[in-house]
Image (cartoon, rainbow, N blue to C red; front, side):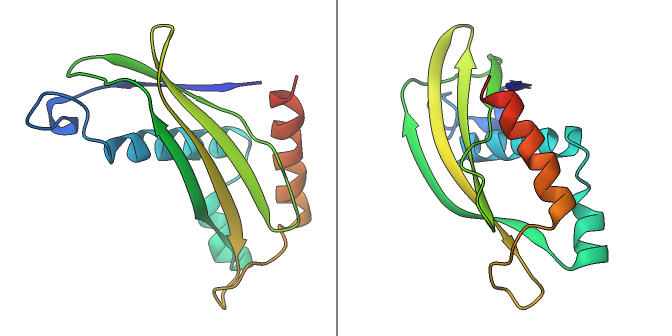
Length: 137
């Protein structure tokens, strides 16, 4: 399974030149990651409330390949790989039609109440492993 999340570019997403402002790609991919996790059955609010753990972005590597414009219909493609004890990576790509515009590799870490990395709870890990197995096919 590769998760797909459609995004339309609104005027507020653009800069003076009418191109998507570079930081907004991070908003687009954040929304797509959140939806992928939600669709896997992980409730992040419950995870925080009941277990005291949250997901936090630790690292992002990004490449801007081509510009998106006002009113473009984009598609964010997200997969999951490198699932470790407390962290996982989510490669993401943004397309307009078949054209790759932006790609990023996002490392996410599970953080406990004390603000340090902590092992993923077993059931959350299992749900992430299911996503990982599906996206590697």
